[in-house]
Image 1 (spheres, rainbow, N blue to C red):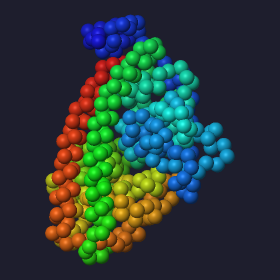
Image 2: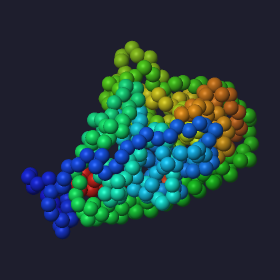
Image 3: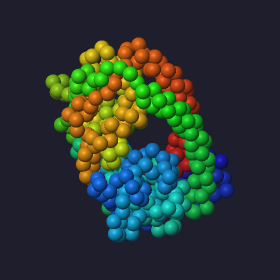
Image 4: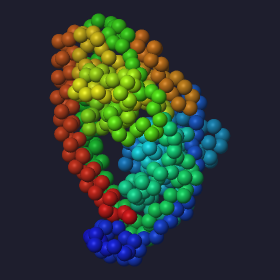
Length: 409
């Protein structure tokens, strides 16, 4: 692979396959795709029908295929013609909690028709680009910088169709696009294999946890009887984010059993400002989401005693009752029986919200402390094994990040 680090003239990337020459051309995205906002179905239509691409599908998959889309929705006349997604279409995250995440993109690589949600923008392919190449191009550092500046907002950030259409990026010929796409696809294939190893471990943990909690014995309690709920950040504008005090992001809660201390963002907090802080052992839950399945997903914080805040789309529960072992609770709130009980509490139409008062009244069985400790140790042992596999995954991700920074302009 050719190294062009010393080249200060030609419009070419630092790393390039040696068989290619000539400069890349700068072109706006509108040369390659047409943009449209997504569908906002009524809540009653969810749970059956055609697959429905949400923001989480964009963020949680290497590529979007029909089988890895989580939600489905019942179609009405004209929906598939207006909001249908075809092979090679690009899906953009329209709205985000932070400016750094606005406009993140993924590609649909399936022949089965799907539709996309209202918090997503579809880039309908004009058929003149390699979809794999564009998937990686749009994740490159330069592309992200040029997309982010088109975002706007205060407490929540958005990007529009017009802004995306005006983003210009450097593009090579199709033959070079294909080779770059294939190389990065190989890296992604190894990442996917590692993810499967992790998924198998997660499946084992879920199965064991569900089996344990299905017939658990103990005292029947409710959250309001053992703890006190509190809200996340309030009264913040876009200018307050980026530096200051650490806060736990929505995705940190959504993706973990225990809150990751590697995944904080920062917000400015005035000296006398009143905001709720997260404490050791607190359970944190997603409060709002695009689909009802993603509401009330929780994680537990077991970090240090620094001042730490919580994003505004989540809420926390601080447990004052010594009968509750935080490590046990982290596994309990991830169990199938708990998720099944939470689902009916999601309310809304275009966006779903959890009613905290109803949540706090929910009853569950709390075993003895000795039993909680035994269950937590068993499940934690598998989590430690999974942590090692995730560390290996991080190394492959670092390799991919390096290639994204060097193989694109």
